[in-house]
Image: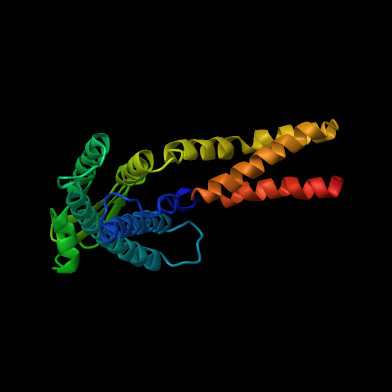
Length: 274
């Protein structure tokens, strides 16, 4: 998941939202920090998914469970920090939107819609869970005659329910991660659409997915052309895939490393047969 996360603020730079350069820089800082904590949330989620004790692993189960509890704790705190950074971004944008302003009305509408959806997402994350972590009661939960503390339940959909204290549980849902990534991409794209001449991120990521999902077929076609001595067709495929990789990297969304390794294997084969 982390390999697929795009670095989108690299596509923006400092946008002239107003005549106030300091305010414009403040918006960029907020976007950059927001992206950092989006990455932080995704990173913690990935760690949590990796914390499950593995059969035949040399790592003791107790260590895996302790790591899980710590990673869930940091996951909740990172979400909380993400929300606070978004609140600062809203403040900066609202200041820019004060009349008179020359911002496109469509941008204002789009930002409002994303703000509402982002706030709904944050609203699904309980602040009481964060508070319980910050001020732990260390009280067990009771189910009938059974007492428990710190236990967690994981399903096969990437969701976890983890006991924090008393009757409070931390809820980790893959849907929250998916929605966050979509909203982040849409947020960046409204700035790209209204203040740059660049291609929307959604289209760049579509190109990236197409290459990554079809790389084996692309390489197979390349090898067929080489074996048939159709060097012009083979070179055209290689040139297109290489230039696409350079383009995607420049837009902050490079191909996965395993895909790049396959592309490099083409170059090595070409040298060996040349």
